[in-house]
Length: 148
Ligand SMILES: [Fe+2]
Ligand SMILES: [Fe+2]
Image (cartoon, rainbow, N blue to C red; front, top):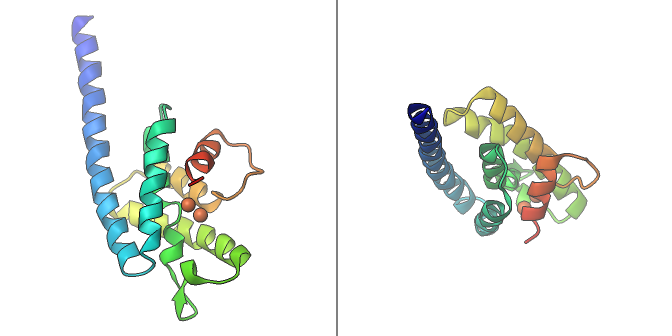
């Protein structure tokens, strides 16, 4: 019994260490991407991540944390000679950065060794992260954290 508890705690500890390492790699990658494309979105992303850490007490912390880091990554994608983040039309910008961001998020996550099931969930959240009409517990948490 005692040993079971200890093993459980060690397992949890290992998971947290792994998440912290993943987070560090992802943060550096996103900083690098935004700083050569649309730098203002890096600061915004960090604020959303901070908010997420305050509101998220769920079991599936990994998915929400990764989604917070990647939700606006689509702004950094090149579009007609500029970046999506610099498009004037708000509605086009919103739609485009969600769509291309979901694909870009998948690409980034697969290069840092995230398992396919998690990638799928994060990519979905990125693709719908401006949709207030969808009932999804994770999406609601992300929407709340994104209000900065
Ligand atoms: Fe967004
Ligand atoms: Fe955002």
